[in-house]
Image (tube, rainbow, N blue to C red):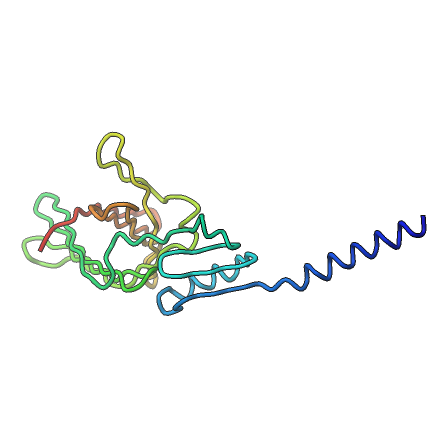
Length: 191
C-alpha cells in the first residue's frame, strides 16, 4: 500500500511539474495592425498558445481552424454610403485603417444645412467571433451576420457601427442615449 501511495504521489508531482513548465506562447505579427484593447482581450483569454497574423487568429495551434477577422472593407480605402429620408440626406464615409479599426464620418443634412455630425474611430468588438450582433438579409436565403464596431464618444451613450461579414453593401449606425435611439441604415454608393 505504501508503494502505491508513493507511486501515485510521484505521478501527481511529475504531471504537475511538467504542466507548470508549459509556456504560454503569444505571437503577434504586427501589434500596430490591431487596436490595443483587442490585443489585451486576447492576452486576457490566455489560451495555451495564441498567434495573430494579418486577418487570422490561431488559438491553441489550431491552424486548420483559425478565427478570421472581417476584412470586407478594403484597407486604407474610403467607402461611401448614403441614407435618404424625405428631405434629409445622411452621408457616411468609412476607411479601415488596420484589422480592427475603422475611421468614420457621418453628416446629416436638410436643405444643404448640416444638422448632425459624428466623426471618430470604430473598433471591432474583441469577442466578435462569439456571434453576430445583427443580421442583414439581402434576399430571401441570402443572410449575412453583422460585426459590431464600438464607438466611444464622451457622454453620448452606446454607439456602434454594424458591418455585415461577406458584403460591404450596407452599414448600420446605432446610437443610444438613455431612452432615445437613433438607427441609420446606409447603402453603399459609388463616387
